[in-house]
Structure formats: C-alpha cells, structure tokens
Length: 232
Image (cartoon, rainbow, N blue to C red):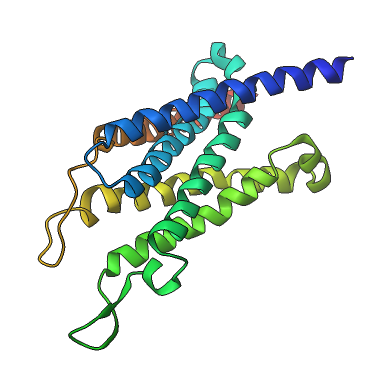
C-alpha cells in the first residue's frame, strides 16, 4: 500500500512537470513566430529543455543555502527526466529535420558548388554540435539511470558519480546554446539570419543564477566543514 502511494505521488509529479515542460515549449514556440516553422519547433524544445535543466540544477544548491527548500528535492528527479525528454526531442528534430541524418552537415560541412566538393563552412557550428552531441549521450545515460532500481543495481557511489555529470551537462549545453544565440545566427556574408532569439535574456539570467547558487552553496559547505573541524 505504501509503495502504491509513493508511485501515485511520483506519477502526479511527472504529470505536473511534463505539463509545465510542454507548456513552456508552446510558449517558446509562440515567441519565435518570425522563424521558419521547422526551426521554430526544435528551438522551442531546446529552450524549454534548458529551463527544466535550470530548475533541476538549482534545487541542490538552494537546499544547501536555504534548508527550508528541502521539499523541492522530491521534484528534482522528475524535472531531470523531463529535461532529458525535451533535450532528446530537440536533438532528434535537428538530426532528422535539419541535418537529414547527414553526419557531415551536422558537423558543419557542406557541398560548395564553386569548389565542386564538400568543405567546412562553419567550424564553430561543428564544435558546438560536438559539445551538444556529447551532452546528448550523457543526458540519455542520466535519464536511464534516474530510478531507484538503477541506483540499487549500480550501487550508491557509482550512481552518484554518474549523476554528478549533470553539472558537466549544464556547461556543455550552456556553451552549445551560447554559440547559437550569440555567434551562429549573426550577420554573415554567405547567409541570411533569422531575427534574434527571444531566449537570449532568459538564458543569460538562468545561467548566471545557476553559477551564483553553485558558488554560494560551495562556499557555505566549505565554511561549515571548516567550522566543524575547528570545533573538534
């Protein structure tokens, strides 16, 4: 009976977070009304995914800084899983709809008629997508191990080591996103660019908040540890 109640509560949290995630996706889809429909869709999934990653990552530091926010820890797994769903959808939409499963195109190589061969046109694009692809793989691993069963099977220490990778995913995704927000879609001699993304300011704010909370919680943890040592 107790296990059934826990599962029901977890299911409710999943439904709430999934609804929130898809509502955010719709809002970002509306915000990019001037973009091409296909680009607009994968951009919306990416932006909403980053917002869920932001929430996932601030819960831990907030709990260390403000212990009264402990109740948020119950929601961290659901936010992490649905971030993975949106991020993977974002990646698959790009691979299928934009790159058409062409590996060379995905990493910035195009056929240049003037040269009569494939050449690298966007070196930064290839690097940004490499970082995005590494993050994609790690996100899939995190999603598949985000369960009590996986924790028991792996053991506490290996499971914890894998999931500390969520912070690495944050930096990979942040750099990947920064390239497309601030470099790729800017004026260029060989292509037209869409209007500036409405996600620029939210992205800067969320990234800054994550970094600030991580640094603050780290400082507080170190001070608390030093205080306990000095009292012994």
